[in-house]
Length: 133
Length: 332
Image (tube, rainbow over all chains, first blue to last red; front, side, top):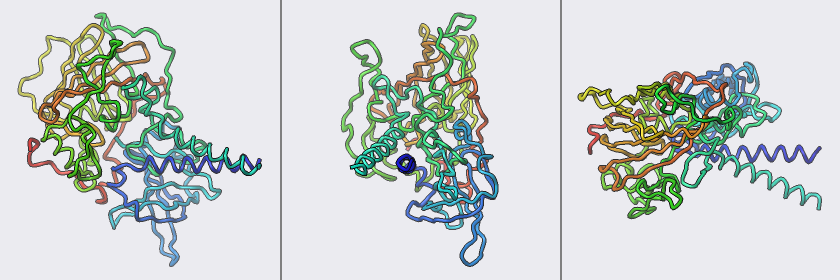
């Protein structure tokens, strides 16, 4: 049982590595600065399930009490839909964490690119996002 | 000992998972072809047990066959026929996602059939594989038989610094529409075939009746102007009349406004189309070259969907993505 859990964890790690490799695409670098990372935990406020990218709005309270909203970018809605992903699978109010997510190149933008996880450690983002074009 | 065994198993699982995800969709069958049965489908399969919408989008990743990717359609039967006896290509197709038409082994010589009569031998050219010293926007090579004009267009392409017209949601163009990962619905009758691209909900109409004539003074466009004819059971489409703003693929390979694409589509059975595209562009390339791909019919439940590029392209709106600007001249 313990061995199964370890294997499952490592499989997840492998999948994460895979997604990172797939993200190494020029059009990601066109929008995000992969050297500028941010980690936050917050509450899902809204999911814009649209093209060419879905965005999950995550409300985060800073240590000083200030509330900010990050927009976590995902793949194209059409491709995610074909993958069985539905916005209802992540209810509004769910607590999620974005670990080492890349910040937007725009200083005024709260857009980030990365993977969300649930509080129990499961991926809150099963599908690693599809290509834009 | 037990710990060592566990470590070996775990390492193997991680590596296998990593490798599998990377190669799915890049299947080449047979050699020289792009796109196996699942190619072109989204890479969502990597996320088994999805609990929520996918994030961390990999633009241009797009590999693998996820749930619903429909690697297999209904059992194959003979290719259906139109009332005039010609093959009916109508259907919703997975055309392999091809973000790089110059991928290893995929650039073929349209003049050289293989020994077994199939198409075609790999193309060879001068300076093949040589690095471009003056490349902008990342490392590049002579991955196609560039003329000096084509080489400069390729070397200068820098999507980060200058943006890209597709990132600005402008029309992808004939080549890039077909290369996109979103599939295409074909509608056909005796006189014409319509391409309904899911990518940005674009379309192209191709007359196949020899009596049809386009207006001679039709403006140049993003998708060009196409004319089709039959060579036996193979539909041959010639497309030209481009505005010169488009690129061949997401990677940014160039073409001139005077490029002529010759596309062939042969429905070999009810589930399969053999697709070739030959690029004839003496301004950009010293030799004609081609790609060969296999399309697969989608599952009946996989329907053509509306796709608005403009509705949520937030990276362009907030200035993170550089907005593409029309060039002063497409000929320079």
